[in-house]
Length: 223
Length: 122
Image 1 (cartoon, rainbow over the protein chains, first blue to last red):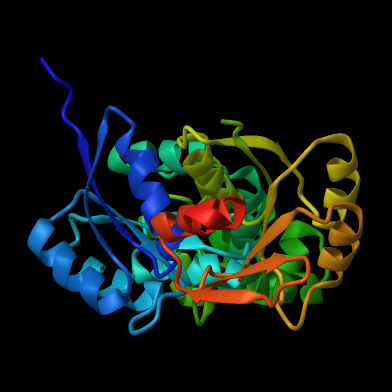
Image 2: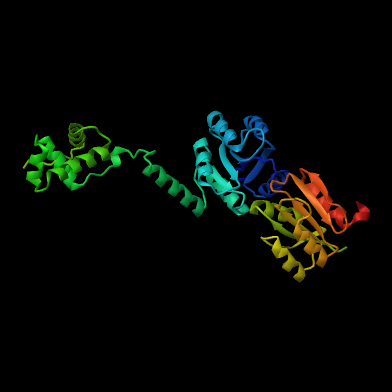
């Protein structure tokens, strides 16, 4: 039985590239190019009519650019998987495409084989990007995390053994001074631990910290 | 009939591969080489006979200096320069004014190459 072909749509204002991609992608036995468009508006119209499985969208088209087209497709036709054809390896641009709903990003500086692999991967619901792009993305995520723009879910926050000791002693009703004495540390060190606990758990006071630990059965048994 | 020998210096890579594929599909044309930087054309053309070079992208303000050097050594050469996003193609030939064709298609590119090589048939 013949293998089902992946239905592809291409939108690019570069006529030469567009025609060339139609020829070359059409030569792949598992691809069929169902339509093309030279700008964003026509791309949207045609994609709505043709319902391709994968749409290759140039980021720098006139009329509506690739980002705008991607956003609209993601909203109106989420089943269409979008691969952006980009010119530059800029992390901000790649992130913007991902946020707009793109399923893949291929630089025009990439090889044709890379584009083919990306189309197949995206069609299989897999992400496919170059090691360089992956490095950019990890770097960006690290930046966002350090800027606290991304909140790490509290379920993944790990408290140290000493922090759990402090919470357990708060639960016993001890003051900072009494906890310091019990743990043979300075009172200021206890305050520092409490500050760190509240910061990690994004809580406002010591009692919320005790509640958090109790719910997760983290409290130590009273000595 | 001898084939038209074509050499590339084109970027981005995807466009370069598309152009290469287009030329290779033509029975009367042959890709004889590809360089990354246009300046490498000067050295590559000293080693390989070439009829047409296709360069992209380049800012096309006046005749690019590279053409002067290439024509000095290869007066019969035709140089096709595609602007960055292929909005236009400029055709340079020694002793003639440059010609500009906007938004070229595959067919137009092939016609331009053939006409510049076989002017009597164009």
